[in-house]
Image (cartoon, rainbow, N blue to C red):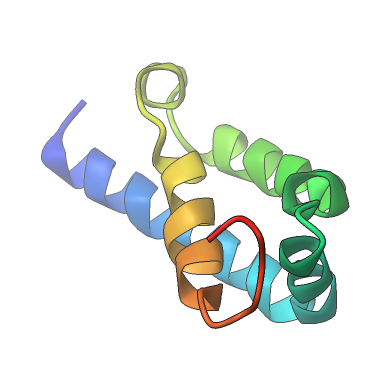
Length: 87
């Protein structure tokens, strides 16, 4: 896998995570406040993961964690202002 393929995969993962964040703000806030983020967003995260998986090579999908990192970096890290037991 080339550096360009890796960069494209990272951009795709971050774009999908950004869309999840944009369209599920209330659910995200509630999930963080109640420490149920991954349960509350399970459907959206899995749908995003499937989209990501369908758009990258199988090798890239199985050997990297770009999608998971994007969920943390794009959604959770940006919501650090929300009061929660998890911080």
